[in-house]
Amino acid sequence: MEKKQKKFLTVAPFECAWRDDLRFREAGRGCVAFDAFAHNDVTVVFREKTGSQHYHYKRDNSPHYTVIIGSHRNKRLNIEVDGKTVVDVTGVDLYCSSTFQSYWISIYDGLISIGKGRYPFQNLVFQWLDSNPNCSVQYVGLSSWDRHVGYRNINVLPLTQNHVSLWKHIDCGESNGKEDADEEMEEDIGEYENWGLKNFLESWELSDVCFVVGNEERAVPAHKVILAASGNFGFGQSGKDFIHLEDDCYPILHALLEYIYTGSTKVPELHLSSLKSLSLRFEVNTLAKQCEEMMERFKLNKKLFDSGKSVEISYPSSRLNCCTVFLNKLPIDVKRLNSFRLTGDYSDVDIYIEGHGQIAKSHRIILGIWSAPFTKMFTNGMTESIASKVCLKDVCFEAFNIMLDFMYCGEVNNTMDIDTLLLQLLLLADQFGVSLLHRECCKRLLEHLSEAWSSSGRRSHATSFCIMPSLMDEEAGIFGTMFCSCG
Image (cartoon, rainbow, N blue to C red; front, top):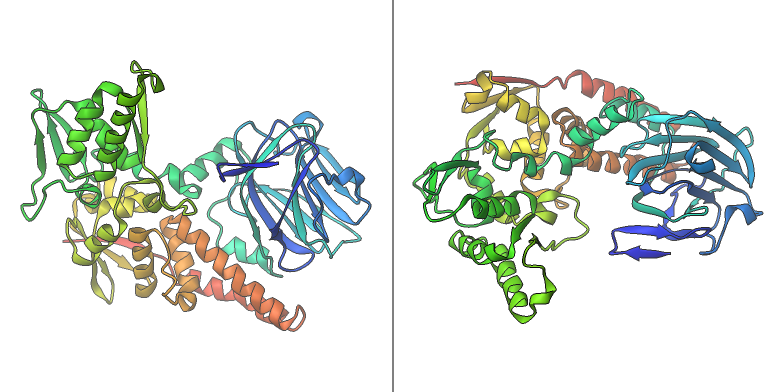
């Protein structure tokens, strides 16, 4: 077994990966969510203690559960108990793929549930109940059969007595059983990277500045706040809406914008000098430095590259463990971006909450990057598309402010006590489609429930868990957000 670039785990044939952190908090109850790619036999083992690297479930005499997705050459789903097959079915929508697919498996007092997608407890595909449950399983092993299996994004989550009811209330969407529909939902809501800033590269949607390039005066749209957070484009106090580039060609500008909006670009070696010059002009310093380093490498050894092909330049990520696009993949100064939120510089929309008046001078592009509902509101051609003010009704002021902070910095501030607002924040993030914030709230909520359950015991705390669904019903009933344009 080996880790490749610390991004995913590759399990060799007939081996098993065990890690101390892949452990249920409560024996017999937990959920593991993960991405996997394989030709067949994505194999997950649950047992009381960890095994060795060369552990194999077929030779295990101790009590355990084994779930095999894509067995029999990727045709069947198998569940084994202590080495004996108890489930062997075909026709269920659970198969392996040569690209990463998302799965989750939960165990709750012998009830084994298996589903697809990034969100546990959603898109349930198959369930089986053990009449003689093994309530001691606690460690999760990631295994294989006769071919390599790759795993990534592995998370172990706690379960509570009412986790099914809880997740029904905070469900991001329902599965219709079709793979295409699942993928579409993940692209729009579940997977933020597929919705992010790259969709607005050279797009007129939400743009508020335009480059005019070359003698042909080609118009290229952009967004002031994004450019200002990435470099110095000379907006100052003039508020100019056009940037003229008379001596530059469009491919060079495109490479610069692509680097800012997506974190990477490709250019021919002969364009490196021009791209460096343009980057220096607008003080996109990381790109200028990378162009300089690449040009030096060419000078030292021309054989390193084929000058007839494009050279790829990617923004050097400084925080590999961060999942947000802002902090991990783009040359955007987050502190500067957050300062624009506080000062209102380059703002193009004022946000009002009923009963609180104006609460923020914001930026449509920032709201749109995180939230598909906001983008649709700003681009639907109706009054709100051109209004300079947006009013929100039936919205918790404190929770909305936390969500707005999250949109500008890409993470929940740990110094902020959000526990008292967790349900409101979770419902608000779900309503506006801010999926990463929604995921963080779900995680914290389940952790709190699990801690309360563990500290007080299963039976004595059962009543308090039953309160949660009714509480969430009450919250949901008063949380119908409505948009209206003002002025």
